[in-house]
Image 1 (spheres, rainbow, N blue to C red):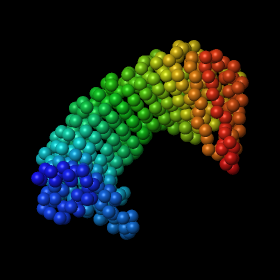
Image 2 (cartoon, one colour):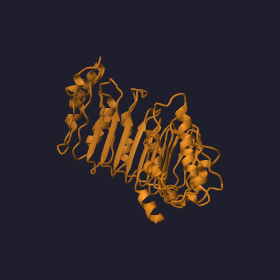
Image 3 (cartoon, rainbow, N blue to C red):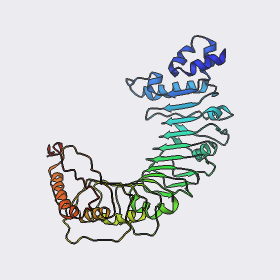
Image 4 (tube, helix red, strand yellow):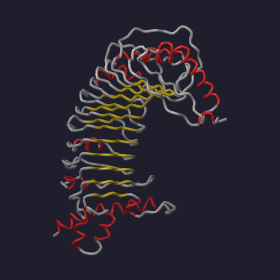
Length: 404
């Protein structure tokens, strides 16, 4: 009968099961083995109206009381989402002495995690999401080394981490995401089977080991374009999708012999005002010539360069017969951008897709858009092969609702 109650209660929201536990001892035993524990303001009934720090005291106290009275047995999904400015030590006893064997998903926000060497093997844990979690010593390393079944790892805004080491014992790890860890200096991954990697933050020492199965990468940091061209071909040779976003490039993209032989989709975004107007877009030809299998190219530029070309540079390179789509967002009249566009056109033999429409634009942006359209008509349209469809989306009516 107890197993039947546990099954029924596992299908109910946590708050309803907790209320039912007040009715009978049988329901209480079932509650102490509830498989899905999600602690948030909604599930615990903590209102925003709390003042003078009451919510910071009451919320952790409720979470702590429930967790310490839970057997730890049977938990499959555990999520603790604490309000900011709370101080709560997650009870690692739930992960020790075999109690955590059944946990499959662990999601922690806004607490401290201090696992010790006594941490048990978390044989069922496949997904870990950590945000604003504080670790002491090698607490994170201790957690990872005991999570051999881990497939998905997200780490966000965990400012106490300086060196992130992903051990080689994580043979099943497929997805790794690291975002906004301000003190992070090194990412050293030896997990051999990661297929997707996402990083956003400051420039760090990045080592992905022999990531032969990695097919998708998304990196956002200053200097990311130069790094991607110089380092990624050797470390992730089987890459198929790459998204690269940079706020600043000190040097132009280098011309190298290394190749992305399997890369099919490439997105590059240079989209903040910290970029020099004189940045040489034409150096991105290095990517085109390194990607013989490229089908889709997306280039996003949103800073302005007012320069009309005279003699355009040309560069010999292989033809891209597999290219299906080239999209340039925020096109301007910059000479190097026109040169890059011409290079792409002469090496593509299928349609170029049009860009997105805009919201109201400032007057200087509209003026540059007019220069860009004139540059396209003057320097690019005459070079478009007959088998290529060039679509130019000029400022639409909403764009002309000028922002002054």
